[in-house]
Each structure stands twice: as C-alpha cells, then as structure tokens.
Length: 440
Ligand code: CTP
Image (cartoon, rainbow, N blue to C red; front, side, top):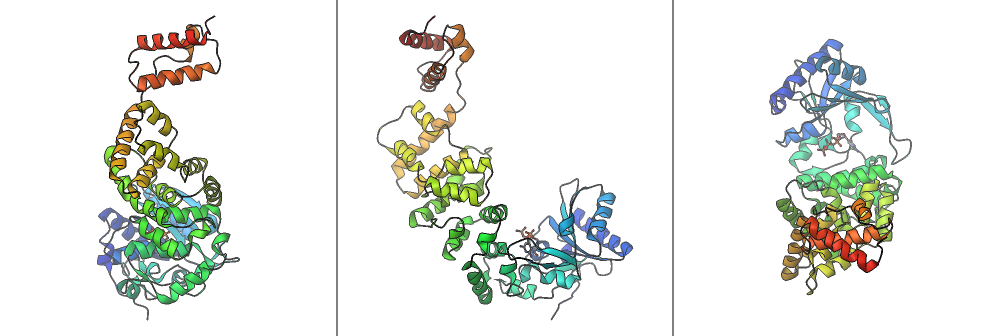
C-alpha cells in the first residue's frame, strides 16, 4: 500500500539554504500548475539519517521549462539534456540540482540508453532501479514533505535490503548489477533473494558485454570510489563479474592480498604527501590487475575506453612491477640515482601500488627498506642539473645523442651527491667530454 505521510521535518535536515530553495521551488510549482518532487538518493539518504547535496527533482509537466524558470530566478548555470528531458543546475554556492520531467522509459534494446516519454510520478518511480531509490517527497506548498512511497522503499530500508521493482530491471539496464553491489556494500544491506537470483541470471548472460566502454568504466570507477572498495571487489569476484573486464582476469589469493593492502598503502602515502592528488579508484583497479600481463591490461584499457592518461597509468602497473620491486627489496644496497632511475617514469598511483604489493608480502624488513628508498626518491624528484643542453654546446659538444647521455650521468651525480655545485658540474662534464674526445 502506498504511504503518503507528510514528513516536512525530514527535508528540514538539509542545510537551511537548500530547504529555502526547495520551498520556493515548490511555490514555483504551484504558480506553474505542476507537482514537483525531490526523488531518489536524497530521499533515501534522508530516511537513513544522512544528508546528500546532489538533489534530484522530478516535475510532472515540462521539466526543462521549469528548470529554466528556476535557473532564471536563482541565476544558476544551466545545462540541458533534451534527449533525457533533464536539466542540471549549479547554484553559486555549489549546490547541484538535476530537474527532470517525470517519465516512463522504453528500452528498445537491452543495455542501450532508453527513449523517454512524459508520465505521472508513480510511473516515473516504477522505472527506477531499486525500491529504496524509488521514494519521492513533494515540494508544493501544503504538500511540502509528502512522502510518496508506492513500492515499499521504506519497508526495504528498514529491512536493510536491495530489491528491484520488476523482473526486467537488470535486463533494461545492466549497470544496475554494479549499482546493486554499490548500495549493498555502502549501506551493508543485503540483496533480497529474488533480486540476487535475477542479478545472477543477468550476469550469466552477455548483457554486460553490451554496455559501452564509458558506461562500464563509470560503474567500475564509481564502485571503487566507495569508502570500502575491498568489499565491493570481493563481491564482484564472488559473483563472477570480473570476467566482464577481461576473460583472463581472476581475483587470485595474491591479487586479493594486494587489494586488501591498498588502504594501508594509501594511508601511508597520504601521511607522507598530504597534498598529492591520487586517483584512488584507479589504484584499486590497478591492484586488481597487479598480477596481469601487459596484454590483459591493454585489453581492459580498451574495454573500458580509458583515456590516454588512464591507460598510461594502468600499463605502468601489472606483473611487470615485480622486477622493480625485486631490485628495491634485494640485499644489495642501491645508490639514490639507481632508485631514481627505477622509479622516475612511474605515476604516483603506481608508486602507491608498489607499496601495496610490498605490504601484501608481509616481509617487514624489506618493506622498511623499500619505504626508505621511496622517501629518498621523493627528495630526489625535484633535483635538476644547473647545466642544460645549450651549456654543453657552449662547452664545445656537437649536438647529438651524447647530450642526453651526459646530462643523464650528470643528474645521477647530482642525485648521488658526487657533484654539488655548478662548478662541480662543469668539471664533471669536461672530464666526460675529454673521455669522449668530442671537443672541436
Ligand atoms: N537511477 C535508476 N537507474 C540507474 C541510475 C539511476 O533508476 N541506472 C535512478 C535512481 O532512482 C537513483 C536516481 O536515478 O536514485 C539518481 O541516480 P544517481 O545519482 O546515480 O544515484 P543516487 O541514488 O543518487 O546514488 P549516489 O548516492 O551514489 O549518488
């Protein structure tokens, strides 16, 4: 039975500025003769006692015209997505709001984006992914805070379960397979048995293969951006979903040990370089690929339609890192310049992965040595030679490949503290030049 209680106090939990805006938007709804609702994640989170500032609004009527009127009144930025009859508003203080026309959706083909048609709010709620995300609250004056829970969302929130609204839900939109895991792990809920059966069924077909690269990438990275991606990855593996990234990808014991070591590695990295910007989700993906070959990694980059930057980072990881790690944990002591040469081409995310790999091996002495090397490397990263190519030219060296070689050796000498001044650099270069016999 639909519950339609008035719960304005629930909306009052939002920051007062947002509550003010929502009340005014409700009044605008009355002025324009349409019902306006806040829907989805915001309502779910409010019912769970949490506050989200990404507001999704649904309008029974022309949502885009309504969004334009709101944008005019508040002088917000506005982006319109005609195909999905949705508009996004960004308020000057950062509040984000999506306004959409309430609609029904048709999936002409599974896994593709749907076509949409205006419909009443009840139908709009019915097309959604899970009951807990299909609760609306009305904003019109007099009805402000009216809770519209047609499909038992509150009951499922109380029972802590994720439930689809109809049997074709995963077929319509296979991204919901990943969303189910995301909400299940985030809230520590359980998949309702019928939903789990439908999910397994959908996962046993090739539906996910039909998802476009960007959509699959988005689901994976959003999942790995959750607070505890380790649980999510374990769940993906258990439900045999990793094969959709690559048929040869498997969460072996070694891989899962690296994945489980990522939080510790990130924490260590963060404590040493608090300002460093690390793509956390990508580190988790890299950990999952830590035993993979370059071919498998390239296949996954392609499947996920990774950007050039993401692909470069991913390809620097994988099984091949073991060689570097071995050198950094061997008994033999390395010079700072040798450490520098081993690490210099690696993005920070890969350095974090190296830490995770080493943490996962539970070899305390080697881990200490490795961390010392990393800290030393951090200090050498900014070292540069005073002399540049043009100085070598002035000193009489013909332009050519020797430039790189000599400047490389010079940098090593600087890093190792063999050379400490510009004068020292000149002497160093001159010695090399005379050995090479390249003076004019
Ligand atoms: N939705 C859906 N099916 C999808 C994606 C979204 O039905 N594949 C609906 C759900 O009602 C969801 C709402 O659109 O609540 C907004 O989507 P989104 O912002 O992605 O999700 P949130 O529920 O807000 O989740 P989060 O807290 O992770 O932002």
